[in-house]
Image 1 (tube, one colour):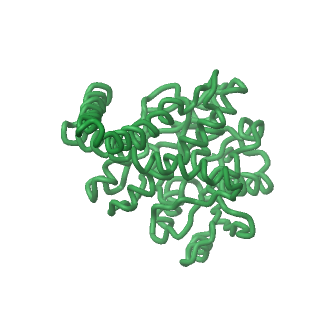
Image 2: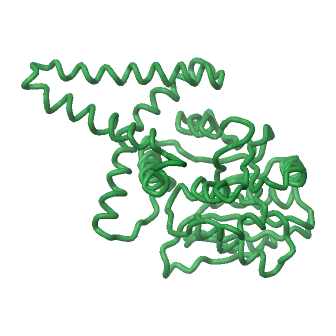
Image 3: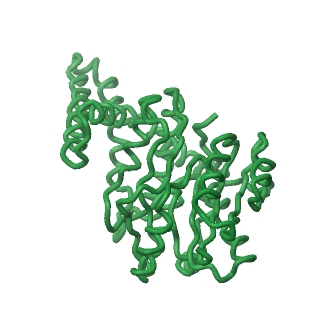
Length: 332
């Protein structure tokens, strides 16, 4: 364990942050260095983290902050005090570390020197509180084995991250898969273990939170497509086209052509129940979801097409105006 350090980031996480840091204290030896980077919290996050003996860093707010910038700040500060670390565990402030994860992750990285990052199963703390929490829990259930990318929680090889200069600090979302693309371009691999890694608290109880999160997802799709959408990566090509098609083209064509076609154009909207059925069948066949969960996922996946398209449009409008991108936050 002397070979590992931890970087945690957060903003107004309150009790969620304390559960996060306490889980690290419970699962790791006392000599494992832990850095918490705070992005302008207005609660007492900094003081409470310091009270637990965690090294705290307040991000400079004169520069627009992002999760990527927070992680980089914590990562390089960690290496200033502990330059001999081999691995670093990244953990979002609304997550708790699960027992046994660190040991399994280190064992995999030790046995696979070409692996840059290993991640596991992130689970929702309260999946039954709202349909949006359930959706997040299903979203975290990615395929086990070689993976194209990781999420915000992962154990990374220090040497690999140094080789690509860490996360891209200007990205307001989608920074993890973007960095993973650069890692894979250098010959590194990413792996997802069939091991519980973290317990996440999405705290999504309102539709407007789901909407904002979907808008942010649309922004990530657009920016990812612009950066890596062409061969060989072809990153986010399908999602990008789907966002425009189902979020804007189909509904607008149905409405604009309704008068000249005497309403026949509204039949285009029958594509939505068909899409719901396709997503439902995919979740049942590929993930063995319960029928109720698969229906929930399918309906909300289709509902998210409009806010996703809005997020894509916001990205292009921001680029056209030459403005600085700012965070799209769905939590209160």
